[in-house]
Length: 511
Image 1 (cartoon, rainbow, N blue to C red):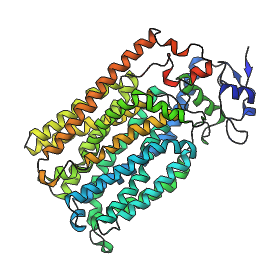
Image 2: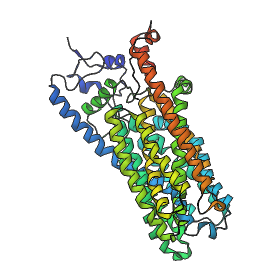
Image 3: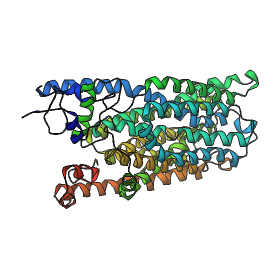
Image 4: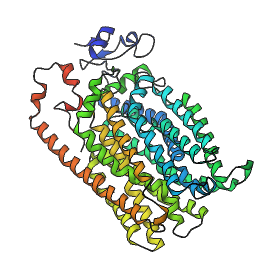
């Protein structure tokens, strides 16, 4: 016998509503509850009709969320790595920076970025995405402009520090945000599109830097200063527009009808998620994240991709420049490897979603990067080394998005997932300090020590960590299927079992 949706039913079902805001009970008086927990706005429809509605809903989410978020990350990655482009247009010479001072300016960004990153997902949840995300973008756009106004090492250090603080919330925040909208089998390709913006930023950054550097002397400013100023102003404007283009979580998103909000929450629940619902923060979620072995193994895997990512992004203009090309030519030649990486990132995201084999995708792709950096170390031929940059980029970028999707897929609970992603991404970015210091001027033109460190990270942490996690997750799924974890739920109520999140015996990990 069908029940009807009332405010008491909503509370019992764990659905958050507000009479003045969203999911207002009065609007669902006519909607029967068919699964005992949430009202079904599509009750009585055939499976074919349901599937058609679901496809339209998914398309609406993609159109409203993904393109703008990709633009935001493009701006973010462009602003944090354009210092590499600025270097070969005279930054270090004009500011009289030593090799150590330049590397310190790179490192300080990752220190502040990593320190603030674990806190940002909690702030995102509490302050709401449409306020938090645009606000940090406006702030870092302002900081970016100030980088073009500095006159010495101290000014550049201060600007890079605050750039790290402001940017800390975007990458973990958006990945967490997307995981609150999509099923686990849908998240990977969206994360791949989002992260491919970084590769596009790399290629676009080279073209943009080559053009802007021609403004040398305009307004009494150097070409590298105009790179920072113009890109910072663009980011500032994007941040202002974002107040109208970024939406809140599904239960409060203004672009959805009441029925569509309910559909989004239902499809997440059916995917064994409760990510769209309100959940009060408790320290228990924080400690649950710290006690989970997957947190630490994901941190290891992610550092194996993130250190190479920043090493590649910050130094590829210099590496190509040392192959014998001019500054402008080096900027332009940095474009194709990034383009190839962007395409492969999306392909891997699609395959991993379809097969649910994220570990195997990481393992396979990491061999491309290992081969690429092996070519950079072992060859003295410019053509072979340039080919190595292609394989290097293609072996790094897909693993970033895939590893984040893997960690997110296997962590259930709104705040626990936020904390886990904060630690994983924060730890990975802290290894940017390593990336900033492994390419020294004394090692040019081959940069073998730097390439060797990157190669070691990819073999030990990315490849090795992915193999270990793949084995452990397969073992745990086997135990759960055989009923050997059922004792974890003995004597617990249905609500207590749901609150176990990814420790529920019926929650099977994505491999």
